[in-house]
Length: 119
Length: 513
Image 1 (cartoon, rainbow over the protein chains, first blue to last red):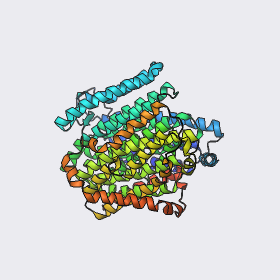
Image 2 (spheres, rainbow over the protein chains, first blue to last red):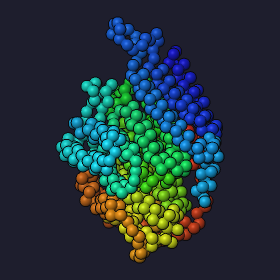
Image 3 (spheres, one colour):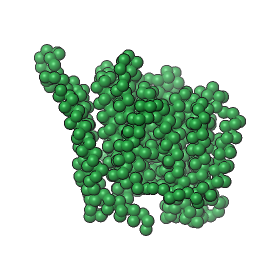
Image 4 (cartoon, chains in turn green, cyan):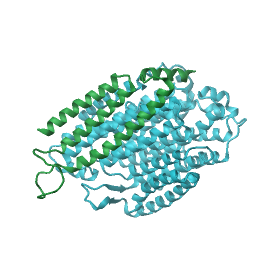
C-alpha cells in the first residue's frame, strides 16, 4: 500500500516538475522544478524498498524482524548529494548570467545570445 | 586485477594534487599520461591471455558490491583516452590556465575510466552524473555568456535525462532485485514474466541517449560543443559522448534493444548530417557531424553481429581521433583568423598555418573514409557486418552526407602562405594524425584477422571511392539548394519536450520491434 502510494505520488511530482521546467520561463523556478523531478525519482526508489510495517534497517534485535530494504536508501543518499552539487553549481552559473543580462528569463537570454552571435 | 581500480583512482588523486601543487600541473598530467600508458599496456597483456577480468570491491557479494569488469571494449576506449590525453596536454602546454582546469581534466579522465569498467547500473548513474558536472564546468570555463548558457542548458537536460535513467534503475531493481548487469542477465533467463523489461529498458535508453549525443535527445550538444574552448570540445566530442555509447553497448548486451537502436541510429545519422550540411559555422558543423557519426555506432550495436561490433569499436576509436584532431585544428584556425564561418576561413586561408591546414585535411580524409585512413576501416567492418539492405543503404547515405558536408573544407588546402604555429601544437596534431594515417595496422590489436578477411574486398573499396567521388561532385549543388531548417527546438524548453516525446518513441519502438 505504502509502496503504491509512494510510486503514484512520485509520478505526479515528476510530472509537475517536468511541466515547471517546460512552461515556466524563470531560470530559478526551472531549477526548483529540476530539483522536484530528481526528488520524485528518489521518492520512487525509496518507496520501492519499503514493506508493510517495516522498521528502519538498523539491526538491534533478531536478524529478520521486518527491516525495510537498506540498499535503496543508501543509493538515494548518494543521489541526494549529487543533485545538491548540480543545483548549487547551476545556481552559480545562473548568477553569472544574471550579472551579465540582469534577467532570469530564459527566453530573453536565449534571444540576447542569438543576437550577439549574429553580430 | 588492481589495475582496473588504479586507473580511475589515480586520476582522482592527481586531481587533488593539481590543486595543492599549482606550479606542477603540467608535470602531473605528464606523469599521469606515463602511468596510464604503463597500466594500459599491462592491461592489454593481461586481457590478451584472459579475455576479461573482473573484481568486486569491498569484499561484498556481486549482488550488493560494485563489480568492475575490463574487456576488449574498455581497452579500445582506454587507448583512445590515452591518445586524446597526450594530444590535449601538448595543445594546452603553452596556454595560461588555472590549476582547477587541470583538476577538472583529471576528474574527467578518471570518470571516463570508471565508466569503461563499470558493471553496475547505479555505479554508471553516479559516474555519468560526475561526467555531466565536470563537462558542465569545462564548457563554462571561459565564462563568456554564450558558454555559460550552453553549459547551463546541458546541465538541465543531462540532469533530467539522468533522472529518467534513475527511474529505469528503480524499475530494474524492483523486479530483478539487483543492479549488477551480469546478474540481471541471468535473472532475465530465469524469470517467466519479463514485461517489465519494456518499461525499464525504454527509461534506461532514454536517459543515456540524452548524454550519448543522439539527435532527438541531445539537442544541447551543438551549442555546448561549439562554444567550448578547442581542447574541451575535442575531449567532449571525442571521448565524453562515447561514454554514453559504451553504456548503451553494455545495456544492449542484456536487454533486447537491437531494433530500436537501429531506428534511433538511422534517425540521428540522417538528421544530424542534414543539419551539418546546412551549417556554415565550422565548429557548429563539426558538432552536428558528431551527432550524425553516433548513428554509425548505434547501427553497429543494433546489428549486433560480431563483425559489426568490431566495426563499432573501430569506428568509435577512429571518430575519437579525427573529431579530436578536427576540433583542435579548427580551434587554432579560428584563433589565427578570428573568423568562424567556413567561407570566411577559406578567404583568409593564407593566415592559417600550413600544419593546421594539413591537420584539417587529414581529419577530413579520415572522416570521409578514404582508404586507408581511419574512417574507412570502421565503415568496411560495419558494412560487412550487416546483412539487411536497408541498413546498408542508410550507411551509404550517411557516408554520402558526411562527404557532402566536409567537401566544403577542401578549398582550404591550397599550398600557399602560412601563419605561425607553436611547435607544441604541431606535435599535438601529430599525435592524433599519426594513428589516423596508420589506423589499419593499429586495428590488428583488437580486431581478429578473420573479420578482416571477410570484410575487406575490392567491392568495398570501389563503393567507398564512388560515394566519396559523388559526394565531392554534388557537394556544391546540394548545399546551394537546401531548404532552411528549423532551429527552434534547440532551445531549453523545446528540447525538454523533445526528450519526453523521445521517451515515448523509444517505448513504442521497443514494443513493436
